[in-house]
Figure 1 (cartoon, rainbow, N blue to C red):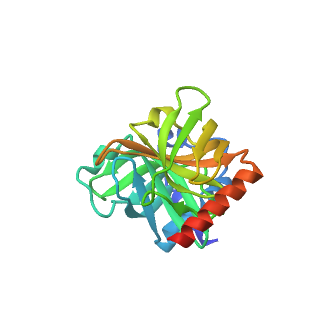
Figure 2: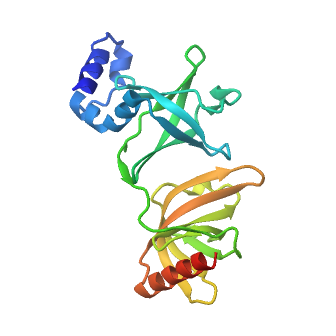
Figure 3: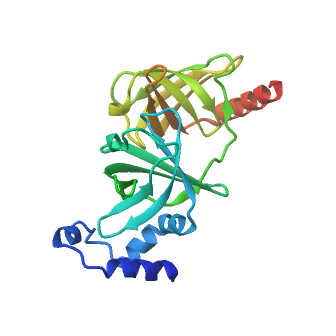
Length: 250
């Protein structure tokens, strides 16, 4: 009830007509509080969250300062470590992550403002704010070993020649040279994925893009996390055996 009372206190403050019009008219107060309860809880508990930007290799930390239901804004403290010209992030998309036990909050938000007075970033409120299982399968890191290449074909367009970063029975993370952000979106279907495991069979399956980020330094590349679709039982067995054997050898 503390969360609801505090939100009611915020909503009781007079707002301009333009601000009221920015609300989601189809969502009532309690529906909005319920939707953003996880973010409000993180604010109340002053929990650190991880902030990821495709413009930087390293991630940042911050805290949620406010959840403004009238303006439909999420307000976070300035990033740590600090960056020069934080206003340059306006128009960019950030990923906010927070782990709770084995559950992961993973949301994408757009930067819509920077306050020089309060040193806070103003972000768009996300649609999905729920926690989901962080990982269902053990993931084997591969970059330190002999590289494994994969050919990944989207439904439309030319296939991507990629290198595997890590792999599990459920999916993989790949690196593709160049900036593919204009060709990607979350849940984008992938028509065909083909790669060959050392001393094993060639794996063929479909996939779904789960997340991606562009890294500009030291060379331009896009990292893409993929969930496997239509992976046969034989290929699942081959993958599991490969992961177990390489883990023992390591």
